[in-house]
Image 1 (cartoon, helix red, strand yellow):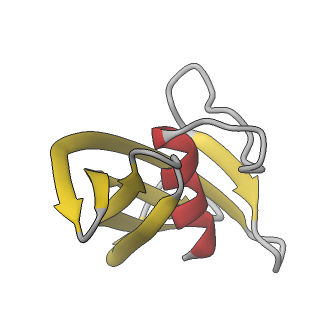
Image 2 (cartoon, helix red, strand yellow; image 1 turned 30 degrees about the vertical axis):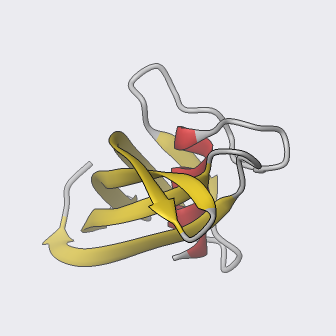
Image 3 (cartoon, rainbow, N blue to C red; image 1 turned 180 degrees about the vertical axis):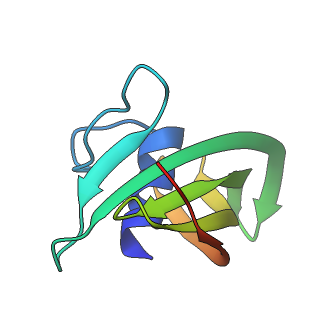
Length: 105
């Protein structure tokens, strides 16, 4: 789940401190998980707008996409991210994975 959240962060705000490889020409990001499995992720984001959270102005993003692990198991991804407008820090990134079954590459 951490890899998916980090990919969401990199998709919204590409910075050097988010250590995620850039996407391929077709928009898919590939990376190795700590246990050696390969994760392939295509994620899109949509800014839902600006809100006020206490004293902070934040941008709220919707996340949607697909994950394939080891070219065999597929998952749908949905979630949202909250970005502080002033500091550009992520206050929250939440993602839900829904297993869609085995896939054929």
